[in-house]
Amino acid sequence: MTNIISYKTFEVVDIRVGTIISAEENLKLNNPSIILKIDFGEEIGIKKSSAQLIKNYKPEDLINKQIAAVVNFEPKQIGNLTSEVLVLGFPDHSKEPILIEPNKIIPNGGKLF
Image (cartoon, rainbow, N blue to C red):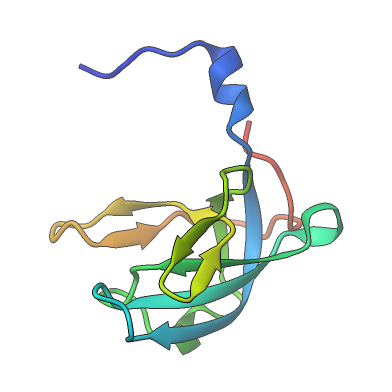
């Protein structure tokens, strides 16, 4: 069963849409990842994230893709990178992440509600 939370608790998690402007493989980690720079608009700016996406995405295919991310978690040190946001996805049949993307263009920084 899923843990039940209040709507007020949900509101604390700040999920925004951003556009990936840079993506580079980072093969130096135990779990290879792609380092993303994501533009969340004027209010939030450009943030970095390390995401284990290599099984389903090539870095060049991620450029200009809009994705959803949590922007108010504490930064997390991953190898030599500080990951500032958590990109969101669902597991495919192999339990590898598939990014959450809006099906229409949204202004960067738009908040999930």
